[in-house]
Length: 426
Image 1 (cartoon, rainbow, N blue to C red):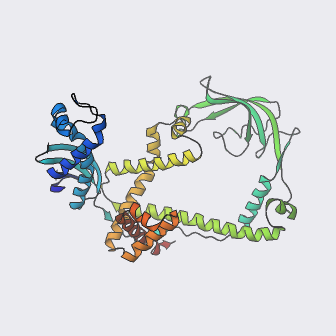
Image 2: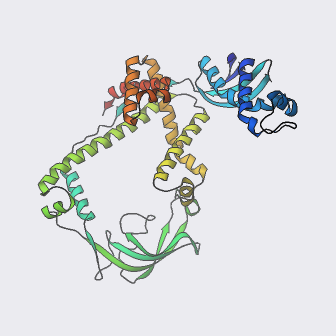
Image 3: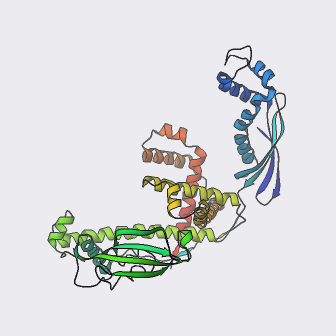
């Protein structure tokens, strides 16, 4: 591959002219011939036995050119961008100049590249001060949750429904006097106060008695996830079958023995305090990382190529799809059930994508500003860590993970450490 020229044609766009020698082009043609010969028929030869020269004479000299070009140009563009010190994002146009056995392959491409950015002061970023201290209120709340989880529901006939009760109802929802999908159910169990339904639904059941028939009026919010119902008024016809209240067990040693490996409530409380403290620490670390990411991304001034945002959105949706699949849900079904379109899902992930793209650009700039350069020892240690994490032989990891990728990860970690070590909690 030879880079002939690299000319900036607009913000974040360059035109590259690239050539590939006749020798490399012809070798790739030979490779395509050997790959496809078994399925090629030429009159006068048994299938798969025709020499390359006869195939080219019969079908045209360029019969293998298209596949050879497809195989060669991606790496050629990547190498050309690296030679021009450009961080490639996308290719928007590809024009062939020359393609023949004597001259090889020459082409022009227009590429989108990562932007040059201005970065504000990343040392001394202010974030909210967070405490991991466990209060008595935290412990009491957790103990009450234990009572609730281990309580039992008992029928109530002597009073009307209250918040906290579990009710069984039939309902039929109407919009403009017509039933709508998902708006009807029989013997549906609902815990009042959990806000499972649209705002106002559960509170209007409060005060009604077993066997009551009544109507509820609600308004779906403008941003409701099922688009056809967003902003619409609805009437629900309700029949109340059953009211149950939760009977809570006493918080004593017997309950603790039933739910844990401890014998007394005092032992359980001591362990609970440690558990809650660890949970708070983890939650605070996650919140801290989120705040830092948002603050750093806000320091970036640049014209971000739309291609970078779209690529990140695709990555996030792919990750989300994987999470759904682990729960046995296809993303197509999720989109349909939520009344969304693919475009709606992309819009939902866009703010997160914008933050992550800016964060990545900022971290890269910080590594450059701080002249971070991983040593051979650090690279070797990172390879060993990856091998241990994935339980794969070190040599195998080295063959699978490019050294340049490991160096980038180390640079990123060190750059983030610089930011985190200079954070100010206020």
